[in-house]
Each structure stands twice: as structure tokens, then as C-alpha cells.
Length: 283
Ligand SMILES: NC(=O)c1ccc[n+]([C@@H]2O[C@H](COP(=O)([O-])OP(=O)(O)OC[C@H]3O[C@@H](n4cnc5c(N)ncnc54)[C@H](O)[C@@H]3O)[C@@H](O)[C@H]2O)c1
Image (tube, rainbow, N blue to C red; front, side):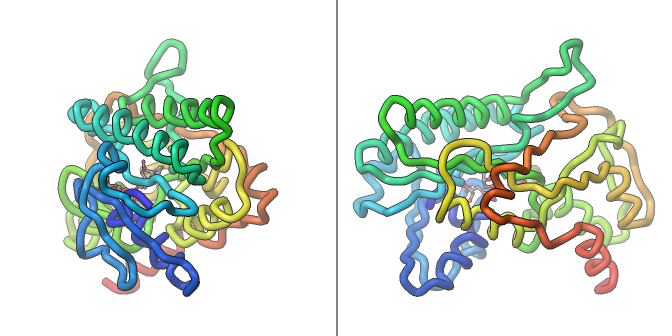
């Protein structure tokens, strides 16, 4: 796996190691990952995906490729990192899979299906969403050109334990949780009506494991179909809300096509309302 010290990767390792036949190796550069997320029983290699060929000497049955630059709005500031991690790095992961005949499961992003109302044509992309989307096309082409065995998932706004709550790379629900606990106003980027399909980490892991076992090709959208606006989420937490200026690249919603996950029998079990209520009950 790449990105095993990150939020989703660490949960995936935890789940995979429940099966005692599995052995997991994580390749992570600790950009947003942390040793605090390490799971007993996994092997951790510190390094970049662009160097995968020199760092990984085993030939795994499957690579879950999660180790990329993974923040939407900050990607404008970090274009150099996006190019290194998501373009150079991912192309090396693909070459590793091609040469060693390894199955690949890619963590694509729902931002590919984003709808925008701040541009004339309704289309807008951040460096993050552009390269995530390009990578899905490249992987499909590796399938056509070289017979790569692959499946592409699309995660929708994942929340849950171990998400980053502080600093530049904190996630939305992580930030709201921290501010709520500290009695600070929740900051909502204008207009606040932008909707997200918030999906619990356990549902994401159920989904990606199913795709790893049975998925083939593109189009596995792992997200709950019910969307909430950011403002609604802030109101459910309660307390004061501070509206921040609009940001470039902030989509108003993302479409979900649930067909391929339904085929695998995946049904999400969690609603974010229960998660927020749990946080509130602990305060
Ligand atoms: N969290 C979400 O809502 C969401 C939604 C859609 C897609 N995704 C995708 O899922 C994957 C995991 O996301 P996450 O939420 O766990 O984020 P994360 O930032 O917690 O995890 C990414 C991990 O990859 C590592 N990494 C980054 N670049 C690397 C590189 N070049 N080489 C090796 N390791 C590298 C980071 O250190 C980190 O541990 C990412 O590819 C992300 O784009 C996440």
C-alpha cells in the first residue's frame, strides 16, 4: 500500500490485518502521514512513490495506491508537490505494477465529478482534482495498453477517527470538531450552500476492501447519496458560525453514480448526523 500512515490508509491496514493471511507493507513519505497512525503488524517503509522501484523489493499481490497529495483547495499553493507526488509518483507506481504484474486499486477523488457555479461553463478544477482525474484516465489506458489489472475507486468526503484536526492540511470535519470542542466559531467558506456527500471511514473501508477483492475497471463511487451543505453541518454542530470569503475551486456538489458499488453489494451504514451527535454528547 502507498500512503499507509495517512488517515484512510491506516484504517485500511487495520482492516486488512484482521485477516491473518494478509501481510501489509506501507510506503509513505510522511508528508501528511504520521507514525501515530502506525498499526501493529504492518511493515512501514519511509520514502516516496517516485522511488518505489528501489524501495519495494517484494512483489505484492495488490497495491492500494493512496499515497498522493490529497488536499483540494491548498493544492494551488503546492503545485510543485502535486506534480512530484501525483504525477511523477503515480507514474512510477503504474510502471511498478506493469513490470511486476501487480493488481492496482487507485484512490480516485469525487472532485472529478464536481459541479461548479463560479465559472461560465460550470467547470473548474484545482491542481489536485485535475491530476487525480488525469490519473484515472492514465490507469484506464494502462488497462487498455498493457492489460493492467486494476480498479478505480472514488471517495466522497471521508470523515472519522484519525483525520487531521490542526494546521494547513486539516480536514473539514476535523476542523469543525476541534473548534466545537474548543468553543470557537465554526468557519464556513462562502456561500456555505456547497454540498458534500460525507462518508464515514468505516463505510469507505468496507467499500475499498470489496473493490480490492472483486472490483474491475473504473467507476467505483464510494459515497453516501445523501448530501449536506457545509452550513447545515456547522448548524448541526451548533454554536457560532463565521463566514469566510469564497475560495477558488470550491465545488458546489459532486455527482455520485452508485451502480458499481451496488453491484458489489455495498450499502453505507453510517450517517454523519449520528457522528456529530456522538461528538456533542462527549463534550
Ligand atoms: N479523505 C478524503 O475525503 C478523500 C476523498 C477522495 C480521495 N481521497 C484520496 O484518498 C487517499 C488517502 O487520503 P487521506 O484522506 O487518507 O489523506 P492523507 O493525507 O491522510 O493520506 C495520504 C498519505 O499519503 C502519503 N503520501 C503523500 N504523497 C506521497 C508520496 N509521493 N509517496 C508516499 N507517500 C505519500 C502522506 O504522507 C499520507 O500518509 C489520497 O490519495 C486522497 O487523494 C481522499
